Image 1 (tube, protein in one colour):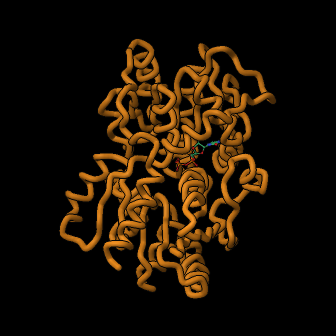
Image 2 (cartoon, rainbow, N blue to C red):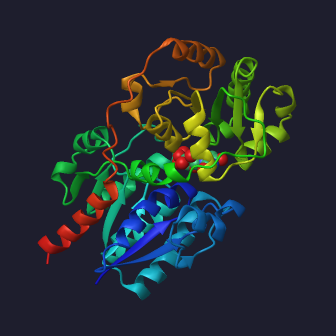
Image 3 (cartoon, rainbow, N blue to C red):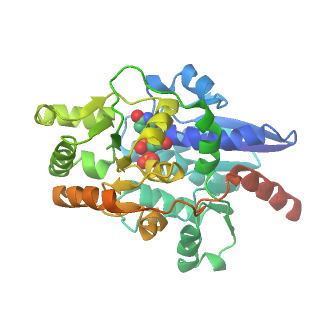
Amino acid sequence: MLKILTILGARPQFIKAGSVSRKIAEYNNIKEIIVHTGQHYDANMSDIFFDEMKIPKPDYFLGVSGKSHGAMTGQMIEKIEEIALKEKPDWIIVYGDTNSTLAGAIVAGKLHIKLAHIEAGLRSFNMQMPEEINRILTDRVSDLLFCPTNIAIQNLKNEGYNNFNCKVINSGDVMQDGIIFYKKLANKPSNFYIQEEFILCTIHRAENTDNINRLREILSGLNEIAKETQIILPLHPRTKNILEKNDVLDSHSNLTIINPVGYLEMIWLINNSQLVMTDSGGLQKEAYFFAKPCITLRDETEWVELVNLGVNILVGANKTSILEAYVDLDKTKFDFSNSLYGDGNASKIIIENILNYEEVNK
Ligand code: UDP
């Protein structure tokens, strides 16, 4: 029996890992143990979340949240190490680029447990981003690196990964698997008014929320567009606190500001929107999966292929660029026919590669 310890901590990681866990459950020669570090925990992540999303509930909850990066990562390492010593897994699987990812990677490296990194090879080339540091360090100690895109593969080649003792695989994106699964379960939100045509927007990334000038500029651009088309903005608590503290919200009354929505409602909103505007990594791809153009409120993106294809426009936090992109996008015809992120079989490819690695290295 192959034992896998999966480390998670943030909602997007649960959504992505759900696909892999559901697939693992089909193999009777693999046992998965799930550790929730607690990095992001709110009422939306209660038992109902796991039931609704058909995601296996975590076996361990570490309750590490709301601390500085160092304290958070350090405490996670200590607790994951204890679990790893007790459970003796053959593999640790980590996802993406959070502190939970890095903590799991460090434990695997130090205890000589094989490490699989899902969403490997992504780069923003912005070393100011904590996520960029987490990804680079995690990639470097991984045995199997599952890349979602050709560009991610190329990034690793450029960094010399061909010479390292690891295997780089283009698995496609586990998020694509998830969308296929969740599309059927999409739910129209019923607690606020939704016009026939609307734009879906989210803002949560530290580079925007920690800089009130960027936030003001973005909101000012959005408010202008919202005079014409409804903008639905499920507001992340972090963003909301900052906006309230700085008295920014009242002067942007055209926006339809709502609390964060559950994923099944989010899927409905993406699928029925005209356009997505976001600083989220995941949402840029989800927009593509539902054939919606996206205006990205960041200076760079890890999903470069979307920008190259012209379906995603990077505008940073500049009001003029936001308004220009909105007008430009309206005029353009888009091609969403390329399967940039695989064919929805990423989870299977990942598990088969882990089993194959075991077979070859017996
Ligand atoms: N999301 C959600 N409800 C919301 C806002 C986001 O379900 O109110 C989903 C979104 O569709 C995406 C994920 O949460 O799948 C993105 O999370 P986030 O923006 O926190 O992180 P990132 O994608 O930047 O890692």
